Each structure stands twice: as structure tokens, then as C-alpha cells.
Image (cartoon, rainbow, N blue to C red; front, side, top):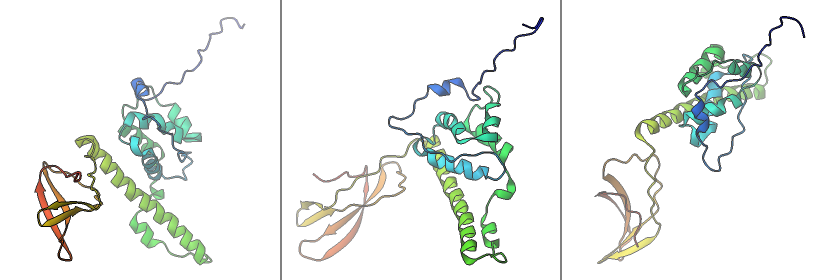
Length: 229
């Protein structure tokens, strides 16, 4: 051993997010998605990567502890080396993670807007097939960004107001006699319903025994009808 040599301690990796985040469990049956990888080579869009990651997280998208645990698995090469060098407890929440990720790797010239799409034109010596393929590639990125914006808005609303109320169920062709008339409840496809306080609308189809088909819209006060027995 060399005289007076100092022992150099072995470096230890420390996660940049709070340690108690590792105690939060994933939902039963959850499978880690096959995430798209970000290398940090300057040829990828940070907005697109965050968008894809958020979309792939799906049901756990509003649980930032789980997002922070999964995010490093989407990084490779220079991006992963940057991540492992982050200071311990330097990432208290997902908002900070996203912010410093953009600050490190964001390239404005890679981002897409509708104005970019309008300006796309066929290049000299470019075949029609090549031109259409290039246009579709830009268009797909733009559509993805729009979906991500809507998805993140829904997640933010859920965090502030709690999970949405259960979707009401209606039973098709479940008829019950009410005096001279027969009422039949038909399936109603309800999308994006925001329930107000005890004030909901139910669409019923009213069938007359002696006449043809009449449609009536009935407004009721109180909870949704789950079906007639």
C-alpha cells in the first residue's frame, strides 16, 4: 500500500426525490409500460417525451410519487447520466422534475405548432410519398401535444376536486307499466358528465301502447336512476 495514501470512499447513488416516495405502492396488477426512451442527444423533443410519458402513465398519472419513480426508466445515455448526478432531495415534486428536464434538454427548434404545419411544403426532388410522410410525422406530434394538454388538464382538475363521480348506468329495454302508459329506459351513452349538486337530467324514451314512438325528455331532481326493477 502506498504510504500516506488516502482511502477514497465508494460513490453511492442517491435518488433526487424524497425517500418516502419509494414507500408508495403501485396499484395491484399494474404493469410498467414499455416507455419511449429519451437520450438527450439534441434530436428529440422534450415536450413530446413528457407528453408520451404522461400518456403512458395513464391511471397513475395523478400520483406524482409514482411518476417520479418511473421517469428515470425513460432516460438513457446522456440524459440518464444527467439524472444520476442530480443532488439528493433536489426534486421535491413532479413539477420541479419536469421544469429542470426542460431547462436541460429543451430545443425550441424541435417543437411544433400549427404555424409550422402550415409552412410545410414539398422540397425540390422530394417525392409525393416522402412529402406526405414528413407532413404526417409533424402532424402526429402536434396532435399528441394537444392530447397531452387535455389529459394534464383533467389530471389537474381531479387533483383539485377529487375523482369524478361514477358513470351512471342505464338498462336497455327495461320496461315497467305506469297506468295507461309503459315507460322504457334505454341505454344512454354518457360522456364527460360533471354532476351538479342533486340536479341531473335523465333522458327517457316514452313508448305509447297505442301509438308510435314518441320521445320525451324528462328532467328530475335528485340522484340518477340506476334502473327499474
